[in-house]
Length: 147
Image 1 (cartoon, helix red, strand yellow):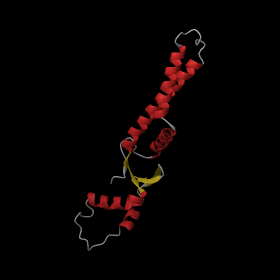
Image 2 (tube, helix red, strand yellow):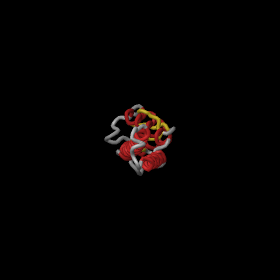
Image 3 (cartoon, rainbow, N blue to C red):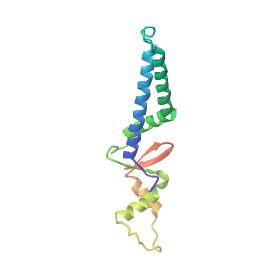
Image 4 (spheres, rainbow, N blue to C red):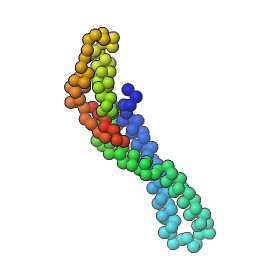
């Protein structure tokens, strides 16, 4: 199921975003320190250092803008909400849950893969029955179910 998310992949993205934020924070702090320094007049290459610090901050801002900041906050919150985050948990889009249940029942052997087509299973009811074991969460505007 391609739309299913693995929390280990989301953890990698969370760490990547945190690294970008750390780079941004460091660049901002270095520029702030330079701009509030009393040594500005005493250092002959002060203007060059300021230009380098502004350039570093511009690069960090380009890599960690508002979208990345929002995504970082959303992933950090999600990582606290979803159980088994670090060991790996599957987030199943709510609209795909019925198909997920069908595949699960086939994978664990409850229903043979070559089940005759003339026998009908109410997959909607089956998904409803399995849903009790799942919690839901929101991520990027989509509701996901996880165990």
